[in-house]
Length: 469
Image (cartoon, rainbow, N blue to C red):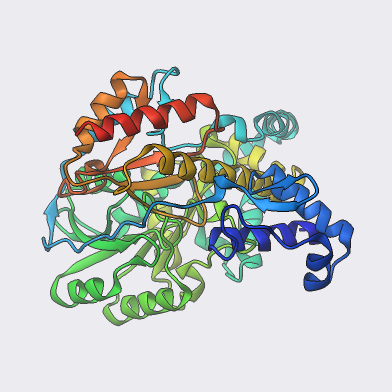
């Protein structure tokens, strides 16, 4: 990363954390040059980049100011504890009804699980696909089906190494997206009827997997900034025969919460104490807004207890369905389960992504993607402050493309979902994120699509519907 990009990220962090507030003047070029020990031209380049990201704006003869888009006027949600020790899971019909609303391309996709496809380098990936398929030796089509494309595995291992996680190559299992990896991990350590600790609220696919495998959910509350409640987890691990934990330790879906470093160490200590494996769902780790990503719990793993699952579906290539798991002591079991089910992800897709990682400028693409998502988050936050009731609360993630809204108690988010859909707007209502159908007055909104008048009008309509309850 160039120095002006680093400087832009440092100032963006000051804006996100409230050090620089909406409407406030940012340091002059001369002051910033002296403070950060860089040249004036570097400061200008950083400020131009922040303008492009929609975080600051120039005023004639006055300097640069933090844009109104960066304001966060709404308060943060307060997530309370859940009482049930364990719960049978039955949410699939509700989830399918919500997902079905996304099929109409004319619907405003606030309920979608993916960012806009326009944010991905699909044409560049297509060239990688064409080149690698053309040059692929015939034997590789068969040989790469079991272990996975060797170039892809090396590239993934290299990215782990850069982040401070050193893996043996045979620990990596390439899968059909992260969801297959997560399924295989759960199957490798549980039997029907077992208890699994999950977050509350949790990504709805987590609930669907538990439902399919006939597992019971032990819901652990999640704080919107600090992540999963370790005190509650410690109590449940002490009292209940939990067989596995399935958590997102960074940029959790739907809240966007990330466990602080000390909390991740405490979490791993609990896992070691009780010898309970962790399935670490880390598909959003590349979408951090700050200069450095959150470190995974996997970095602390000395016993092979952590199965760390990742994917390129959110950061690079949604339709290619290429994910992986760094499976620790469970790698052989997971590999055999994969061979008994899907055998292999697409060999050409693996080769295309490996080529792109090596030659296509993945990190450059990620910086642009993060900047776009951060700008769009600011736009949605500002729009919500304009159109939603003052009692509305909202999360403030440091990455990703979701915001979690907590509306006044009288709002029924399932009814809100139906009323919004009638106006051509999709949302993800709170109950699909809970085994107990909780969070009835909450909803997750996706800001991963370029912000335009249609988006603004949809937020205004949602605000009017919420006001009608």
